[in-house]
Length: 229
Image 1 (tube, rainbow, N blue to C red):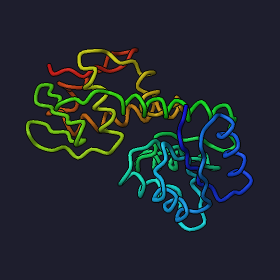
Image 2: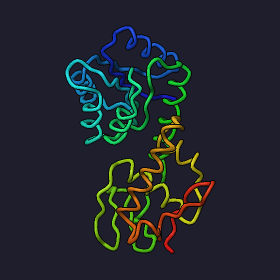
Image 3: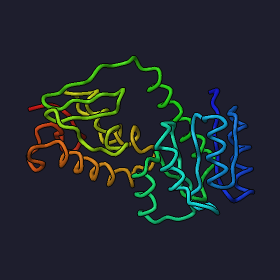
């Protein structure tokens, strides 16, 4: 796959090894060792995907992720030496697409990069769609806006993407596994909890009565279905 990647890490040894690993797969790789260098690299040329370390010398990778996500939509994979769930939650909430804890298997990094680039390419090549309406719920993919009964809903990036994916498959039951892979990458254990949390938050924002949903329905032992009932 012909793609340009940006890797930001202040560990020079790891930075060089990750760059070589990705270059061996045919990717063009730009590197930076601080948040400011990462921002300048993006200003020079927007990458197809970024791999960001959480710990950086000037400001952390989560802040860098937040600043990039405010402007760009390319996939972002976070790297960290920490294992605390809170780091993952914060990173994903500010717009990261996936999370990988150091030390990691090189083959796993390559697999995740390929998967995110493939999904980004599929999204970019998808035909333009008009505003989607399901009952009183409206979703505009172009403006990334969602409304319920004509009123705008404030959604995080991940909440919007999850809702939009459910809406694009309205009436179909989507398995938990497919939602994990689509929205959280490969971290199934963490994604299982995150999926439940995000479904709960979406229901609070779009359902007249979240405890008795009329839009997002649970299919026990299988997954979720979005349908106005």
